[in-house]
Amino acid sequence: MLPLSRSGKTALEVAIWAAKQAGSLLLSHLPGQREVNYKPGRANVVTDADIAAEKAILDILQGEYPEYNFLSEESPQINTDSPYTWIIDPLDGTNNYLFGVPFFATNIALAYEEDVILGLTYDPIRKELFHAQKGDGAFLNHYPISVSVRPKVKSSFIGCDLGYDSEEGKRILDMMQTLWPGIHGLRIMGSAALGLAYVSCGRFDVYLHAYLYPWDSASGILLINEAGGRITDWAGEPATYKSSQLIASNGIVYSEFTKIIE
Image (tube, rainbow, N blue to C red):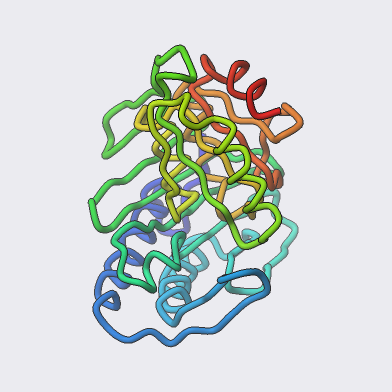
């Protein structure tokens, strides 16, 4: 049972409220000029919209769960004595957003110690809300979802991203060259959050990334596990939100895929 908030709402209700507030704000800022700052890493940017969306989320979550820890992409980490931590990415896909590509999302997850127990990924453009609670399955707009059942790499639709590290990005491209043309299709997403969510609902059979942060992956890891998939680090160990290199799959093609890219 997830903890109730100060006002008596469930953690899921609060997370949905916060994500939709952030999504509305991102959409309202989308047509305008962006104030942009650069962070370490290739093309790693933060916009004024990231900051505003994060503030909207934190205002809600801190108001409802003031005693919890908070780990958010654009703010200093807040540590308390609580075993619970909210993990927040206000805008995943910032470069897509910056260039007007309508493919980005908000991620909110809740962890108990190091175990993610609630994950939510919200795409405000398509009004698609992916969520999962540990042990309860995965959902898209409150309808149950599951990973694909395609059995072979050659029939697989695969997503990936290059990240902000040039060498790791080149490594991904080398892997994709090894796979091509022996797969059905390949997409570079620009949003790890949506790449992982798309595995959870069967749109992708595999998603690969070489350098992720907790706020990128916490929600997606739970979504895929609850949807019946398999998600590991590159050593084959079960993924945690602290894993930076991830292979997400429907589970059926995992062994064949990893053997090919070795």
